[in-house]
Length: 173
Image 1 (spheres, one colour):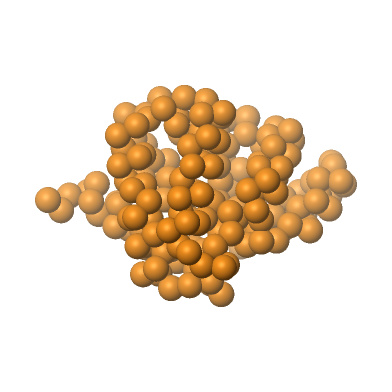
Image 2 (cartoon, rainbow, N blue to C red):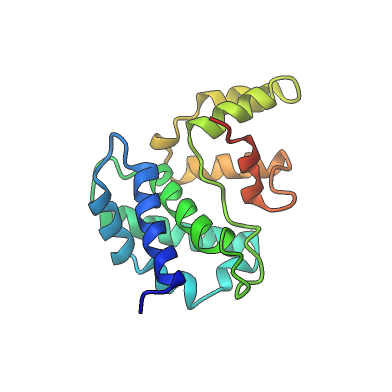
């Protein structure tokens, strides 16, 4: 049945793929990897991932590693698939205000050059080390450890206070 949930799902597949495909692969390949990873079932049928930051991070690692495996592409880095997951979750849960899950506040923001550049600018005077760190990051090259180092630094700078995804207020192209 084609309803608002199916519409949101299809849009999230397309948007996730488009957000990370540049100089990487085509939309169809990314959509196939998302479907093969069974992301829809893993997010809709099991809401444990929304219980705590630690549970979300475990879920994040599992899904992103599944995506990397299913993409089977040399440029399929953790940073790229993390953005795919972030966009997918943003559309399906944050923007839909899904009441089935306890909280969407642990969902990581989509990390990209625009967000990192804005964070570097914002923290230029407050925390020069963090600002310089953000300037050096190449999100498309991040491996799993580097990605979570960044996530932890964002948390250390209290950028996850209300809801972690609210960090997108700095995303201003």
